[in-house]
Image 1 (cartoon, one colour):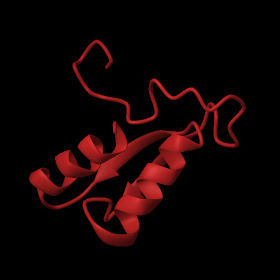
Image 2 (cartoon, one colour):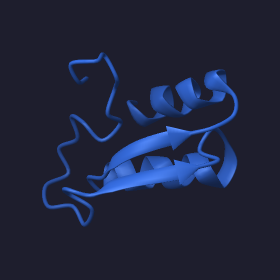
Image 3 (cartoon, rainbow, N blue to C red):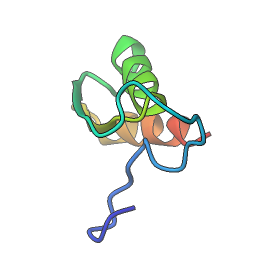
Image 4 (tube, rainbow, N blue to C red):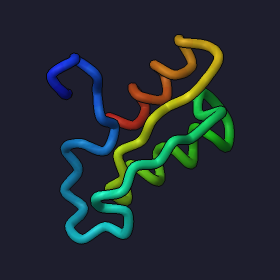
Length: 68
């Protein structure tokens, strides 16, 4: 979580060397479906992911699933 209280869904992973370390990904449509899956994979690969969706609850659900 940064100083503004925003969560980084790439934080806290112990996956070692990751292909997207140090990268930022803006994923539109990441509240559900393919966009949500892409956001989770990018985060798992080390990217800081900006979740962009029209529905806040869908965006929060993507963040919650990424932290599991």
